[in-house]
Length: 108
Image (cartoon, rainbow, N blue to C red; front, side, top):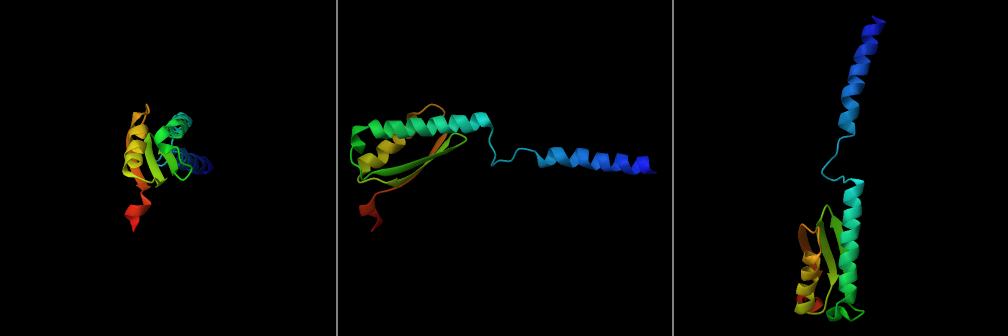
């Protein structure tokens, strides 16, 4: 009887532990994390080097998750608004770009 209980307990643990460790849609591997970090760094570098963003008043945040880039922040005109998306899309490994950048004059 003891042996049957131990085997049953072992079976329950053997089934539930792998399920608890399963990957979810919100998790990413170390390689994905590294790839996302490289994408973010490249986009930030390109924005910093582009002459259209020569003002210190432009604040753009870049966040990458599994190759999908989210841009947020403030730019001062339409050319900057479109250019930041062009830059993000040009970086290898980018699968999609979500542009949440705003132009202050258009908010009012």
